[in-house]
Length: 82
Image (tube, rainbow, N blue to C red):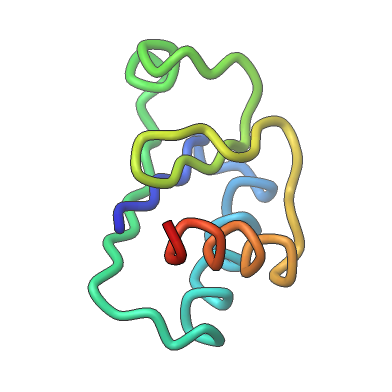
């Protein structure tokens, strides 16, 4: 599983990264790559207009808000079950 955090490094983007890593840890997921993309041009190329954004396996799952650890866990559980 590949997870991308999209954002320029603002406190909201950092909180999303923190919540995502905590959710991964709490679920005990292995083989998960987390990448934080700071480059605005790359973010725009991915058709993200509002940050922070969370992308799981190239699918935009959250944009423009900070989901809680529990919300992220639910998103990741759905992806693992597919």
